[in-house]
Length: 39
Image (cartoon, rainbow, N blue to C red; front, side):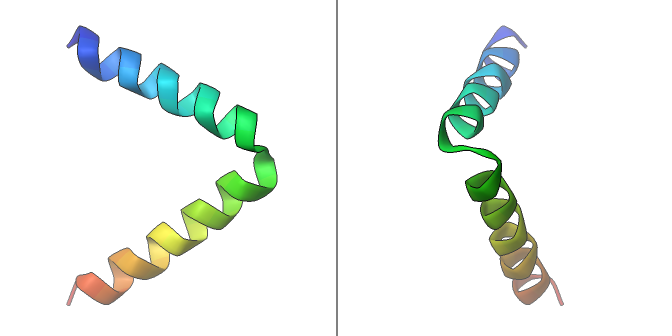
């Protein structure tokens, strides 16, 4: 359980370092990939 929370915190810091623009771009790309993979 602790590893999951630390990973979430790490991802949040990672996205904060990249900036909101990159976070939005990754979210959009992820949504597109998920829609393509899922039937």
